[in-house]
Length: 216
Image 1 (tube, one colour):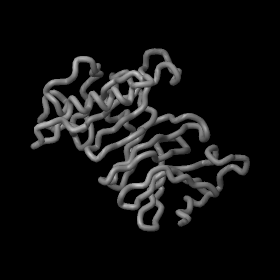
Image 2: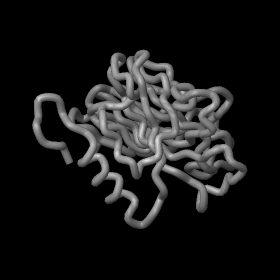
Image 3: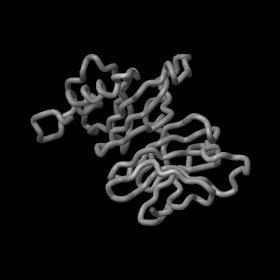
Image 4: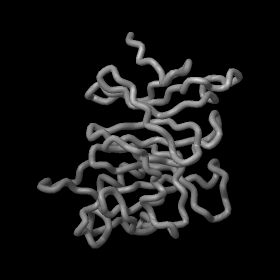
């Protein structure tokens, strides 16, 4: 067992380990209030690589942040928190040495969507994020949605890596995304079978260049 350390405080939590031995999670900062209890202490997302822990910072005035997932390209997703110890506030992407960027800034201001947590990022840079539509329902138990952000080719006029989007999947909008690429978020209901449905749709829709069959 190896102690990864913290960012100067008492607590640290490792959330994800990559095949390259890199770790992301969150760790306490020094001088947290003495009454804080673990997750309610002031903590920041971190990247631990080759024995060095890097503070990934936070967004705006949010005092706390947490890294959830990292791919082999060094892209990290997670969330920041406006009141430490409570629910996630803003989803973020961190890459190329930072600083972290709010995923909301990668979608149009009039999209009617707020992304509060980056849940997963794969090797193609596709991000699965949790969010809410600005339709008056702020209850995550009833109105939370999953959004799939897909980096596209700059010459892709459809804003997605497919010319035949499944008609059963609602397209919210085209967005301007990573490195001036196009990203298209997909809205999917959260159901007991939602994850299986999402995987099945991806298997049907997305093809790897040069491969004749869809990739599951």
